Length: 171
Image (tube, rainbow, N blue to C red; front, side, top):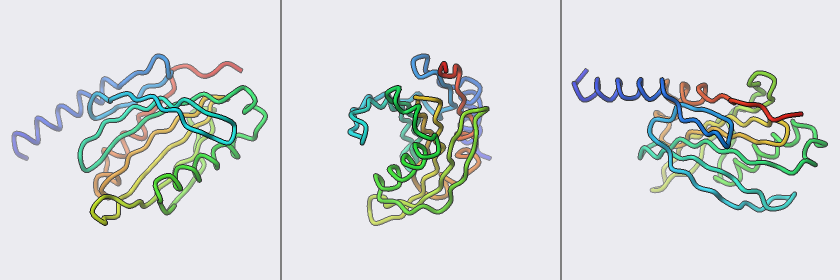
């Protein structure tokens, strides 16, 4: 291992020990670098939703974490229906093809984990992996997209598994 690789590995290990924490979003996640925050207004079937997005773009791979709050009326919808809508919307938005999908949980919070292919610039095919959780009216999304070898790596696994909710939404 070269000296530069050892420094990079040590830097990533230190960053994994000090995850990015969003007090407003009530989550923490181990990002590979300090993320840039963006707030987007997204039209949906139930009205415009403000999405809080945190991005660490590493060139051949990008790490995203987001959260948004739905109106209280979303509590009347079955969580699986909301999550399925998010899965379908995510795949459609990136013009992707779903490869795998499974139900997951983060404690008592229901979620979905998906893997998909997607087009990249230069007529390349990339990969995406996402975990999507619905905590009552708050939706969390954690995803990694880019070149397949980066997305399907141990560091990709570690990133997705590092996500945790620091305070659940009240009933």
